[in-house]
Length: 168
Image 1 (tube, rainbow, N blue to C red):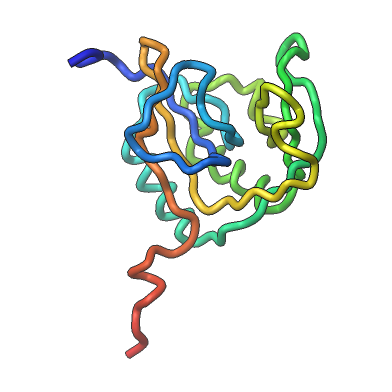
Image 2 (cartoon, one colour):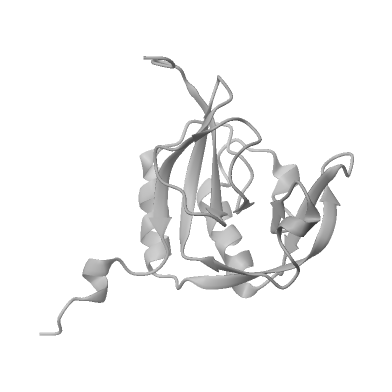
């Protein structure tokens, strides 16, 4: 099997604008349209992080993010992005990730100020005012080969079993 024994170099928490599934793999630069909620962590993904995030996100409510203008990001201002309107929900989601990931190795340049955005090939991909339902967070791990693999997903809100518990 190709890649067997290959080390996972880093992981990235994000919410996707498209439906994705755990196990899907993407070439570098080819992840579906998404909003990063924390910069790439330069350590292997650990299940202890997943357990913490699952617990935290079960107490949150899904929300709607809104596209809010075009911009250029990156060290040379050469990366096209669609900004996402700052809201209590988007900033809170980033803050929660910072709480759980802040001690892990990452580039702090991209932590503060948090500027939620979607990297796009063309600004027209996402019209201003577009509404994006945020009901889950995905984790992509990047292997040394440069391939991103979706390794985990967390639903936002109580799990089905918690939603349907009966009162005694």
